[in-house]
Amino acid sequence: MKAAVIHDWLTGMRGGEAVLEAILDIFPQADIFTLVCDRDAVSDKIKKHKIHTSFLQNIPGIFKSYRNFLPLFPAAIESFNLKGYDIIISSSHCVAKSVKHNKNIKNFCYCHTPMRYAWDQFDNYFSREKNGAIKYALISGIMPHLRKWDAKTAGRVTHYIANSNHVKKRIEKYYNAQASVIYPPVDTQYYTVNPAQRRENFYLAVSALTEYKKIDFLVDAFLKMPDEHLIIIGTGPMLTKLEKMADGNKNIHFLGRVPKDIIRDAYCRTKAFLFPGEEDFGITNAEAQACGAPVLAYNLGGATEVIIPGQTGEFYDGTTEDFVKKLDIMRGKIYDVNNVRENALRFSKERFDINLRKFLKDNGVNI
Image (cartoon, rainbow, N blue to C red; front, side, top):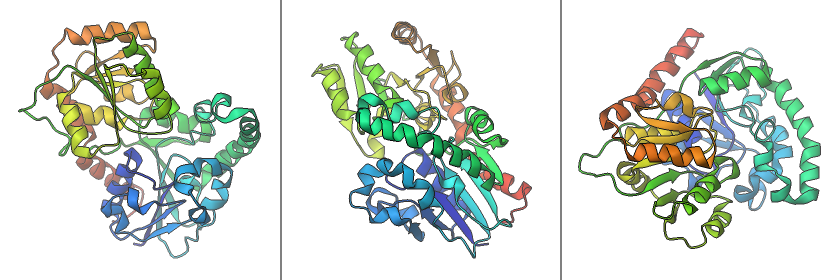
């Protein structure tokens, strides 16, 4: 069986790329189609496959500015020629689901979310404050057409798989389609408890530094708690703004992009992992719990499916006051490390593989 795996873009290794790798384990001979690919930023496992890119790949500086070309994404994803393939697996949070194909070919879409930019995350990505009045006006004028295209092409998918019940509801809302839920794969063998490590006096956030991740909420909160220490791992367009917010305060530390082993070590040492944004699933929540760390998360989105309040972490209501209150509760509480890790095992790579293979088989795919 000749499979084509469609992925929006390959410019780094995040949760979506972990899903892509797990899909490639099921289809080891598959070809990859993606809008752009920075080969220096992706894993060897992905690079072993034949990777087809769109015309966007030829634009100078595209890897840093690809979001500026959002109006061209529909034409780019529709430019691929998928003749000769027996099955399509699209890993989509933007336009991958809308690839054109013969009607007799099934398109199984693992949907991380309906297009964030076009629907409920528009203001976080394209705010007037961030883009200026002219660019904001241009994007606002284009966006209704992009939403219309996104909804119209939703029917090119024959089977939707959502990465959470939260996303399942959004697929139904925006695409008028039903989806089955298969949680994304977490490497619970790599992210595991280290019995030799002791919990230390700091809190941890691991995140891309973009608006909707709400890391600025954490910085603001810890500026009000100078005796508590926060470590932030990750980089992104908000880094400079966040560093200015922190203003050299010694209780807030930015580590930037670091290797996986440093992240794992931090998960094992932190008092608690902090997750202030609304996510579709929130794979770092599960990674932290796999290492035995309790999580304090915003009580919305996929996090509500990953954390068991009172057992593996707590939720706060989005306000600084409740965040500080729940953090105080967590300081005085001992969470059973084994229970915290056991909860994370619900999202293991092995379980993802079993569930996806079963779903494909139940829908007529012989692997």
